[in-house]
Image 1 (cartoon, rainbow, N blue to C red):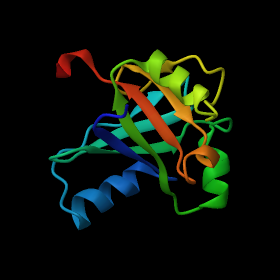
Image 2 (image 1 turned 180 degrees about the horizontal axis):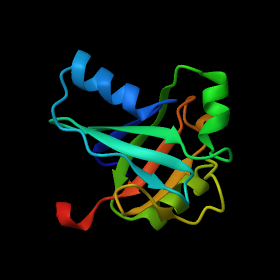
Image 3 (image 1 turned 180 degrees about the vertical axis):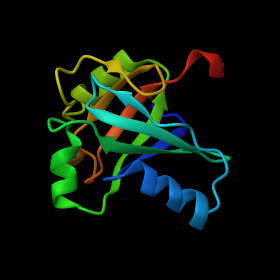
Image 4 (image 1 turned 90 degrees about the vertical axis):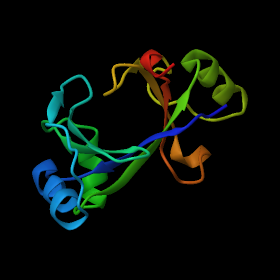
Length: 140
């Protein structure tokens, strides 16, 4: 069911500090500007790699869902892994049929790439929060 690895989400208390790390220490040369995703409660930017992306996410406001994660991991860290799927509704239904918990209402929402996404609870995924993202149509 899963397709290619699209990105690894990394929570950080400061995107600016994380960008400096990826650029100055790791040598990343292609990094997007950060932007606000108010409906998700996060700031986002992407570190573009030859074979994938790192999604840097920082809390936006006091109600950000990242606040709890950063309270447990003050320096930040790996937050989720995102895989592409051809059909987000079929993937959601398959996850549910296999007993996995789809977070939120279970209805897909629009993610940072402008495509529909769902998240699957880490307790059902070996301790890793999994994001499933419908493959962007322009990749076909």
